[in-house]
Image 1: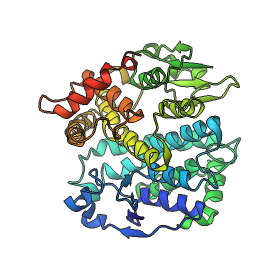
Image 2: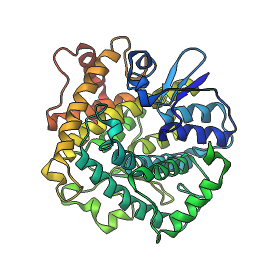
Image 3: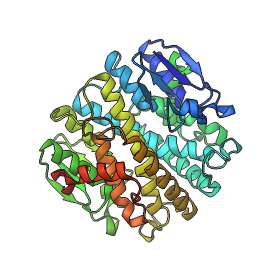
Image 4: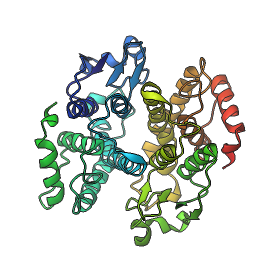
Amino acid sequence: MKIYEAQAAPNPRRVRVFLAEKGIQVPYEQIDIGKAVNRQPEFRKINPLAGVPVLELDDGAHIAESVAICRYFEEIHPAPPLFGIGARERALVEMWQRRVELYLFIPIADSFRQRHEFFKGRIRQVPEYAEAQRQNAEERLAWLDAELANRRFIAGDQYSIADITAMVGIDFGRVSKIAIQPGQKNLARWHAEVSARPSAKA
Amino acid sequence: MKIYEAQAAPNPRRVRVFLAEKGIQVPYEQIDIGKAVNRQPEFRKINPLAGVPVLELDDGAHIAESVAICRYFEEIHPAPPLFGIGARERALVEMWQRRVELYLFIPIADSFRQRHEFFKGRIRQVPEYAEAQRQNAEERLAWLDAELANRRFIAGDQYSIADITAMVGIDFGRVSKIAIQPGQKNLARWHAEVSARPSAKA
């Protein structure tokens, strides 16, 4: 078993933090995304969509998509639970994981991808969309700050995969100058707490 | 228990098809998205992000996000399994559900949302991005056609939530003139099969 990843990219960090929380060690193989190694035919046999990370199982199966990789480890190594326990909590964690991914992490990523030199020629860039998503992301930070007024973590009283997605997304906002604002005290309190966990350095 | 939804929108259809496959009946309450009832303060108490569908549990909890609602029913009513069985298969289904959602369903939805009159004033529209996503969606249909050369369903030999997401997304492509092309025989074969299931009419 090994994981193909790229140290500086945000999605691989989600998996590294998740595994650190579980106390699981998996060998990593670095893919040079700066040289677009992930877009070459050899890597596309591993993931035709060219994304990292990808988990390679011992039987040769390849599991792409950060959340799918995390799900695999949740199943084989349930403690501590990071997707919730029981139908109700699992659904609520999934709701929050999706909310922070679709409406915060992805807008922050788009703010970078849709206008930065790095993605020129790699995707169809629309710089005007980068700006729209930057504004969307800032609105969602304000919304998330309000949501965090009455609970410790994104999905409730327990740290979960939703916290990982939100933390990694917000930290990646730095490259697009998207940041927690001075008045957003709840978000700042939450961010300080999740960032102080040893897993945040993974 | 009930589900707030809107009959004509694609995300609610994902949940209806899922529940039909499970043989579960849940009362529905229609929300008039044409009149933007979902964007008014009363509905935002149910889902601050204004999306439908939303599942309301008997204890008053609200679960938004189609896949989170489906996950809830998978947990309380596991048969037939639509998220896979066992760590490996569950991870592969999740990978495929995410691939068809992030790289096909969402581009198809963006092709509509980012330029159609319906979303004017509701979201920050960037028509140029609608066109980029239309082209992305067409490329992904070609890719998916190739993927389906050697297996019956999106995630393998079993029908899963990934088939539901892909079918609903592709059917919604009609409003943006995105469609399976004449040469895409594998995709056409798969689409005919999933569309013939009674659940497709839900």
